[in-house]
Image 1 (cartoon, rainbow, N blue to C red):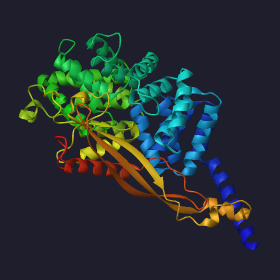
Image 2 (image 1 turned 180 degrees about the vertical axis):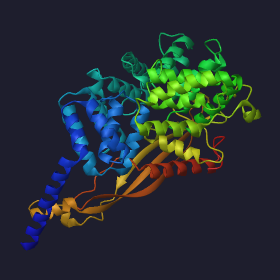
Image 3 (image 1 turned 120 degrees about the vertical axis):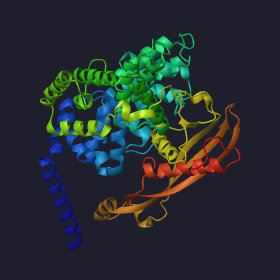
Image 4 (image 1 turned 180 degrees about the horizontal axis):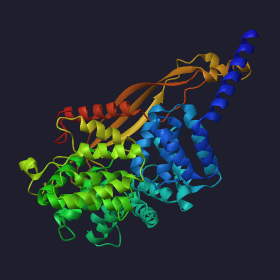
Length: 528
């Protein structure tokens, strides 16, 4: 009895301390703003906390960027914050936020429905559940929420949780694009360029160009890269190296890391554009791009990037009048920025550097880098979006790095081999004491303690790989597995979300090694 009282007193004291801390915590102000529907204020309060490492704030910020709560939706930023939150947040942190999303979703909020569906799809704080994912995503799409429409289109396009149906996918992409969804614009641009969109004679380059332009203006780095390439090559429009250079610089400035092969393509295109332009044209283009970022004219409004590009334009400028003009605009912009933002912009611009034409010499190509024209140097990978980063990371570690393509990527249809990766997991609960398997009639205090005390949950993650040739004939199949220990409670070990990023990458590297050793190994896989 004495121990029971002590335990209860400790639990009560802990709860009291937590409540007191929550009141004083800056997070409380942000979550209160979220609860009353003031999403803009909530984001402004929680974003600094997320950047300082608060995992609860990171979860909220990931949701903000995914569905557009208080900030424009941005898939790249949502994915970045999802990874950061997943690596640091505890089940209690997730429960605090997801309970709010669930309450809002059940009340009919389309944004919350889309967010909850995405969480079930990716295993973001809840067990992966394709049926629940489709249920909530469809509810959001039917309600007309733009992110729900785009996500449902992705499910139909991939045949993930629903039968694969490209026309149905395109229908939902169009609905999302009509509401300004950047990712939907990019998807439709790629599909239109390939001639896969009904109503457009294949290929409909002018329509694809407009889709890319809308997606690029919305901040998508892949669209910015492709638009820069179009202007540089003069594929659909007259060749315009200045316009091309601005889009390529903007794509290279993003904090979202592109896959290795696309990063290499981007740098080659950027080098070509720099070789075509004179030094003064380069500076003028950077200054003009800075003005566009400052004012949000045709590009996302971003003071940090605006300062960065203006600062780069001013570096080494020999024309005193022009230098004074550029520095004056830069310094005027700095007056409305926070000091830490100015310092960040300065660090970025000085780190980028601008070698003169004489310094650059022959390192800048004078002709266009070759476009992908055959499938001998790429591997087409089919895997759910939540594991694509692991595939990229594993491919990047190859010597040389493996060139991969996903569904919808330019050149994907040219790959000579493909591999389909299917993920599954099993949780070993055998180490749990039988004492905890049946809590009916058990001592209440014991049950409480059992629910609180951590307990190892050995979890086996498995990837099934099916290798096919370009014609679709199956060449090989095999499984690779990795063990990862999760912490549950003495009462239960739940089917946690997906593997951690490191385990997922190891799984994919195992797959690529098996491909290398296989007699049906696709060209370009060697070295992993």
